[in-house]
Length: 143
Length: 347
Image (cartoon, rainbow over all chains, first blue to last red):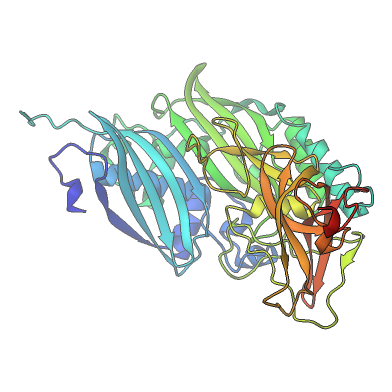
């Protein structure tokens, strides 16, 4: 992960440092409410069980927000998200931890594409591809 | 479906009829002239950032922009519900609800951000029903994937595009394992399917197909008496067995075509040994060349195993297999009448 060192432009193959996110009930519910998603499976455990799920689970908008945050956290101020495409697999239930990892797949100047995986105790919660513009380091007078 | 398989159960026909009705919604509007219930605003942005733990400086201060990943949040109906959905979308939802698919889970979200959204921006949106899948069986239950595509605008200018896929499914059959939409075998045995395989007299159960994310669509098709061939949407190449990507062009996207049911024996073996308790040797296992140009391994029925020949015309049918835990379907191929004239001596 030291591959993705600050101060050097991203290059294909760079691995981003992982981000571990504890999946709490509070995160699931606050994410659902902040995204105005009142589907009961995201806040009501009884209702979630009645629909075949063992507990409440994170909504896709929150996952989307966390994936975006993971990349802007890493690439820093000035980073702009251009495209985020995600697919959900194993759900994020309370008590689990999701570890986001990323690998740079394309880099052309400021335009970077990153493959992202978020794994929890059940498997891959999310897989996706993010396209973003990263700040071009002003002082980098690369020869 | 092959015409020779006229004895499909009512439940299966019902499903097919439903799918045809669902598919007719493709291309119809999901939302027209939708308006965000709130303008883009600093409070909602801050609440979002607090929930996500997002401290990006671009989302704060006097020149703040909204986190691009909030795109969909500005279009949400909230507790008061959607008021912008089209009659077509409501009708589609009602059809699915009526079929027992009352639960919903989102599976895919693809967004493109063309210009930033800033506090004060009033957004409008239009959406179209892009596709409806055939019935699929998942960990959560059996149902249909519905994909919509939405354009989000500010002052008429396109600000973002949002493709969204949900699974509408029959609730209550979920496992307590990985509960996401990862596919698994259909837990509900089909009724009225002809010719169940004689469970060999209290014999050990036959091994079940191993169903995984990559081949689940194949087995979901088989459960509905449809033999589905994967087709690469990149280069059009058909492939069997199902794989996550195209061996020719590498594209991961695919759709399916339904096999007509005709084929020929490309090669075969007759199993004598070793005996497996759930099977009754000798029996023929063939590599069938489908008319569509792909091959698959399957059993041959309708002729004694020693009458199977290379080049023999065969036709698809489905057999139900039962064991103590339920029943499932298998594709098999029946020798066409007159195809197996005779045994070894003529060969």
